Image (cartoon, rainbow, N blue to C red; front, top):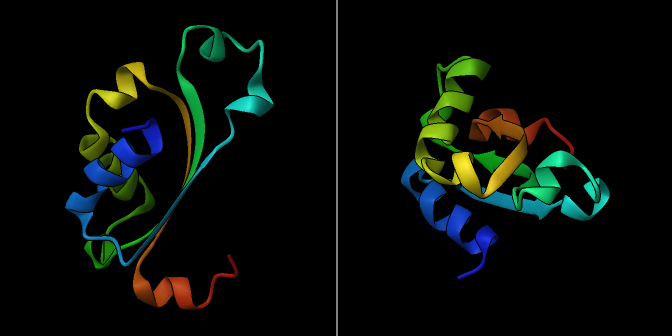
Length: 92
């Protein structure tokens, strides 16, 4: 299982209606995080679990779901987290 598949598996705990993970690591060649093996990713996720939650709370939910990956496999994560209602008005 590659890192993106592993991330998707862990984020399934948030019951996403939509999830897209893009590996942006190639854009950061030579960066300290890239040298240590941690990847750079963009995450687009839609989940009803985010309803009533602040942006900070949503990010904490995602970090918690990803667990140990945040310490070793992921150096940077650009998060776009929406409720299904919010996602309807966001162009992606």
